[in-house]
Amino acid sequence: MARFVYADNAATTPVSQAVIDAMAPCFATSWGNPSSLHSKGREAKKILDDARERIARVFRCESGELYFTSCGSESDNWAIKGAALRGRKKGRTHIVTTVIEHPAVLNTCKALEKEGFEVSYIGVDENGVVDMEALAAAITEKTAVVAVMYANNEIGTIQPIREICDLAHAKGALMFTDAVQAVGNVDIDLSALPVDMLAMSGHKIHAPKGIGMLFIRKGVLLTNLIDGGGQEKRHRAGTENLPYIVGLAKAIELAAEQLSDMPRVAKMRDRLIDALTAIPYSRLNGHKTQRLPGNVNVGFECIEGESMLLMLDMKGICASTGSACSSASLEPSHVLLAIGVPHEKAHGSIRLSISHETTEEDIDYIIETLPPIVQRLRDMSPLWEEVVKNNK
Image 1 (cartoon, helix red, strand yellow):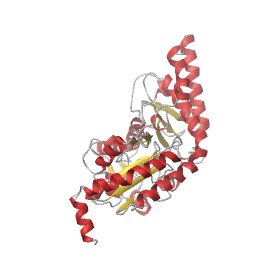
Image 2 (spheres, rainbow, N blue to C red; image 1 turned 180 degrees about the horizontal axis):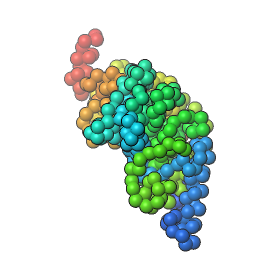
Image 3 (spheres, rainbow, N blue to C red; image 1 turned 45 degrees about the vertical axis):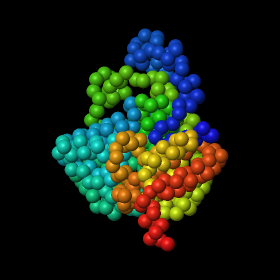
Image 4 (cartoon, rainbow, N blue to C red; image 1 turned 90 degrees about the vertical axis):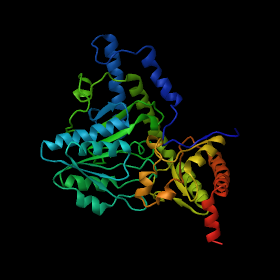
């Protein structure tokens, strides 16, 4: 293998050595249960409280507004179900979301439909930006929660979250955003961003898999998703995963420091987009500029994305065709279909998600490697023969 390039950071990231080092004492010496009253428990509780305070400083919120979960999907479920079930007590039995949300949001909404809730799924334009007029029209006094992701995990489009918050709050609805892809890529200031709830996941920012977080603004009341003991102020039962919480705190601090490097990452993204869209019969999926700094999603006609992935993997390049949570499905991406990509072309898209660890040499290697793969696959395709024939 000539070179290894990891370009699938939207799926997961390697745990950084600094995070591993921060976690190590919680396995070796500070292994107590934070709920225990003895010295080992008090030591663990102090570490837990310190981690929560450190995260709060990064997001500019109160530490008491942060709740640790197992992952982004749990946070999504808790926010939406908790808000919906609480809202139903006041006659609010309606939910508003978009058609391009992560499966953790869409399937949560579908589950709530079976419980009697009405859900409005709002469409997006060709760039993946939510239709604000349709969104505004959908929100009513019956709406319990509006759930719109901060940035899309497949095409990287960033939504106008602040404006959506205003629309939700004007009707008395709660506003929730899944910020799993946004955290670490954009600065999130919860003292200024008026969301009521925000979800994130550690493994997208070099913390381990199995740790997430939900921000719940002070004064917002949700029905519990997990009942049991008194952990997390009696709102999320289960012994706290102290090592991973400490790892998450360290990862968030490092991600905040690395935000200054995002303009460089965005320049590499744009160079990669320009090179790949120069290939005939290709298209950029998602907004050209209103997108995550490390997200590149390009579709190529007359090609199967899975074939591209396998051939890239043989060359040492890790990429994906879309959400890792849907990779086992043979169905085309619901996100690409929503932005108007025809069914037969949606299979030919590839997502390359780079990070602060990506180098210019990595981008050079992708640009050198991918176009010949596209041409080789097209040369084997009878569909490509028709395209060439019809355009001679």
